[in-house]
Length: 319
Image 1: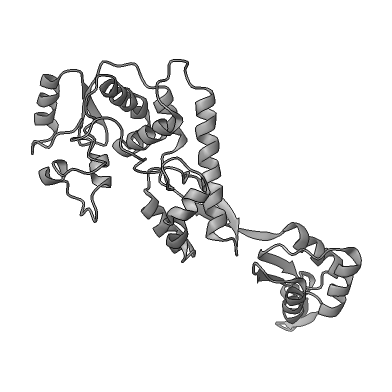
Image 2: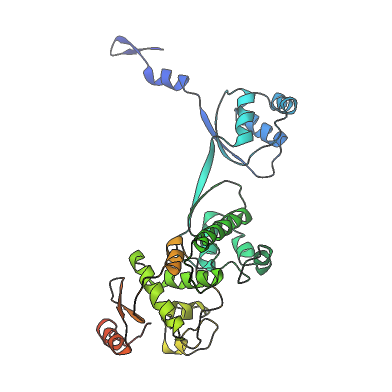
């Protein structure tokens, strides 16, 4: 294309370049759509010139399966290339779902709903669904493995949930297979304890030490006295734990009940699970938050009381 610029003849590179690069269309193929519907959508969007010939080619070549997802198609592609793309899902736009470590089941449901799975609660919180997966504990708490997941548009919340559970099972099994010979807990008990370790610290380096403290207490038949377990057992917790909470009997109140709570209290990551199988050797039986995101550890109640006075001026006690 020639253009006149300030009295001179020039070449319109922009227009030329635009004509050389095929236009790209992003088209969402929904789960459950058959090839006839897909071909009509592609024809309407200018990806293929004829829906009829596309379907006919698919029947002749036995390429009738369509993968759901968001695809990037270049206009003017041959029907055979489009069919191949639909068969194997190449070019599909993958979405990302990030689940941080230490979230409870209800918190993960909120994330799922924000991601677009509006029916997440009816699936994830359904005890019948959990029972169908044959999980220890009878529900999904602890079994929704925190990680980054990639999925396609149209994937169901059931599919994502099963993927998360499968990854949790795989991770726990891998740690269990390499456990020390003298490990005293069951795999599910390890998962429960890992969830407590996960909630007790945001410092990754502290996990083995906190695991060691709790295992020391369990060996001595002491109560765990873990605030996060108490909080988990409180309906509609407002963020401020009180003495009333600590003295209210629930299955999760480890200030009043010995041993582990009946289920995990969150969904732990691999680091916390590993810390349970490989706790740090320590004489400590207590720890208190130092106000900087870490903890101060002690082996005697007297030392612990001093640490509480130093770091928790209001006298709020922790394990």
